[in-house]
Image 1 (cartoon, rainbow, N blue to C red):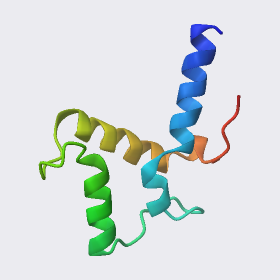
Image 2 (image 1 turned 60 degrees about the vertical axis):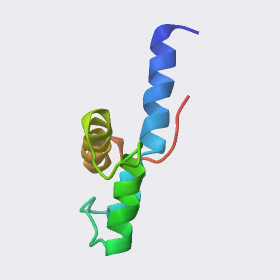
Image 3 (image 1 turned 45 degrees about the horizontal axis):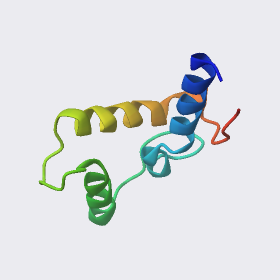
Length: 81
């Protein structure tokens, strides 16, 4: 397996498992209104160390998934191999 195919599969897996996608409208890709519980679910998901802050690599992960979840070019939930 080449490095290119490995990185391609990793990228496709990341697209399929984007946590933020569930909080966007599937047609418009607009962020849905969030309840307080949903907000805390998102916060807890990205606050990996549980210290109450989203910092450093946690923030990088959130921002990467947030932007990717709105990207119209990779809206398919299918993982291609």
